[in-house]
Length: 310
Image (cartoon, rainbow, N blue to C red; front, side, top):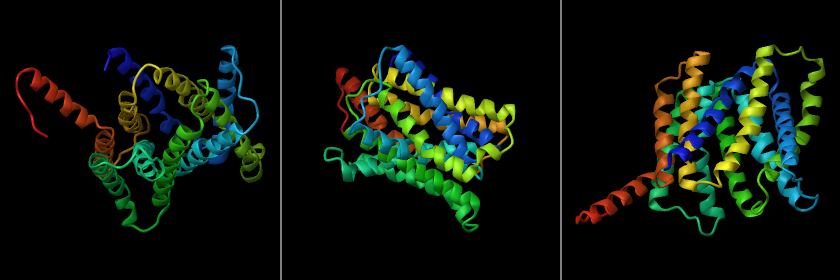
């Protein structure tokens, strides 16, 4: 990988990774639905202004907006709420680790929904490793019964499943759109879904004004973790292949765990570190990292007159 590409990936992970810390801080003073409604509303407005500054517009209303509505609900509104609700009971470090299971769910769903993307022995091995890590994460809380922490972990795993589902959906229905058009539209739809729920259930107009710390976390989550992250993401997908971009998945939990420990004083147990390692190892296996290294080693050996068998 080129150094410039790695630095772009590192920057994206450094922006996405702290999102779980910002959620933890903000949700302590804001109800989850209102928090997410504010997050996606501010992010969609920011992206729309960027879109207009680039001389582009949102697609005209039509069938494509049905797809934006689907993505807005299942890629943003629902998983964002599940993560925010779950972080009331679960450390931000664990949330970042669970977010890393998205590629594992994607591989399983693709096997059944995408004709040319079947599970291979290597992908199956990686998937089993990753889900073993997920089990290691959840097992300690299950031992004590279905507590709030357990429900929080399951909510976040469900959010990762939603992400996986929408990755496949977007590949099928949202290809060929101009950069930022789809995320701007789907974040706008997410805000429209959540606004009436926030007003009816949370009654934010009757809540006390959050502290400056909570509002700062919300602003960082909306502007950096959502709007700016989308801009950078769509910039780097034009510069590198999917295998290189997948490195973001390995780095986000690292940033998330480090910040949770350093800033919030969280103390993940041994199961969190083992589970994280297994999940990252599984995702790397699914993405063919080790196979790519093995093929590179074989090419080098062949150039030197040696032969390495599979």
